Length: 160
Image 1 (cartoon, rainbow, N blue to C red):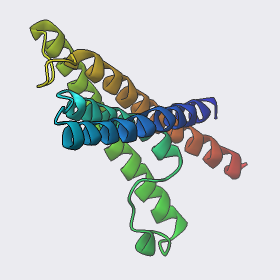
Image 2: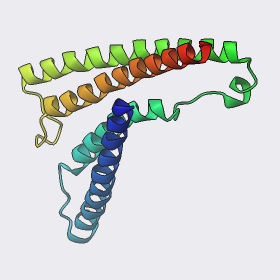
Image 3: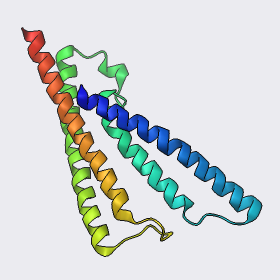
């Protein structure tokens, strides 16, 4: 439960920081662009980065909240044993996908750092953004492992 609370705090913090920042940046850029013909060259890059980080920060908590997509019309009609099998298959598949994303993110961080890559505006370096995203993706994998542990403990407690 501690990890779930930490994931929720990360999600809320990301929403409180990123969403208003995105709204202010888009609004400010729009006003500057259309009323003063002075657009912010880096604003689209910054908004893209903020949306990427918001998405990645939401992944760990979304797993605990069951916010992922599932066909509830069918799932809820399945017997409990089949639902548990579907849940385990879903967790294993999501974990494999999460591990692949985290692994590729780590490689991308190293490549971007080594090549000194920047976003198209030339204002934001890529590797710190990718590193933060990789951390959130690793936390997503930990969330899935933690949910497997919780399910296993519940299974053991209900068998007693």
